Image (cartoon, rainbow over all chains, first blue to last red; front, side):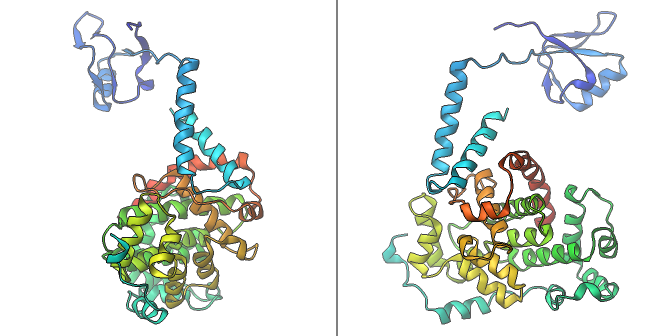
Length: 107
Length: 287
């Protein structure tokens, strides 16, 4: 997969994000090579050098329906093991659903 | 450990004698626990006595400065904490810190992980505080009850290390629920043992009851601390604060949940808040 990088303003870059392409200043001078980690210190340095945006990897594609189904199946199985001694009461089952949903919504 | 290698269950007198040999609460905490109308007294001398126990005061102040109270790094003394948070909140904080201080130095036996124990206890405390707020109850008392609900595990593990090693070996493979294994090898549960220590420490009746009945909330009164402690314990297991040695999620009582009258839709966002506050509170209490 070889997707185009997206250009993000420095303030929106999460420290630790890798650079998706070589980065040069306005005069074409190479500042950082692709793959360099943009830690907090580097982000500050780039701001001082007048860099406004940097290339970062594009967001991952949304999971396919098959991938979603596989993830849900795994999460449900794991949760069922955790709830093996929790009985079948209404409150226990409702908590199972809330925790399963939370698990599925986690990044 | 095979059942043959485990000594027979102790009798009640032996249990009581071993519990009597465990550490007391720091004296200022015992003082805070004596008398229900203490908030009507002049608190300045008491604040000075709390401050005189520097380790205890520092631990309580770290919690007072944790993000939950919304004033991180701004509460500099016990006196200030009383002004800003109120006497009841500081009293609960000091009692919680005192219990951690009395118990954290104990050396439990094999198979028992103090880290796992404290992670679960603090997770339950934070969960209990949020559940109390959602149901309009006393959040500070709920926090302390949640923190102390499982002290009986530590009690039994320190007082009967060989028995408890067998209990844990049996329950950690999810072969048998912990309480059932305790009854099999010791003839009493951690809830009973914890209530015995709570009595010895002079903890309030509401706290003793929360410790004793957190696995049997249906036996408690509707307005007690038991429901909060029970639900918080189940949530803490569900949120897996003690990973990788997390016990299975115990049954959640319909009675306890319904009595708290919390909407499931309001619980879901609260779970994130509980998870967010957990590490800070753990660090504040145990650092």
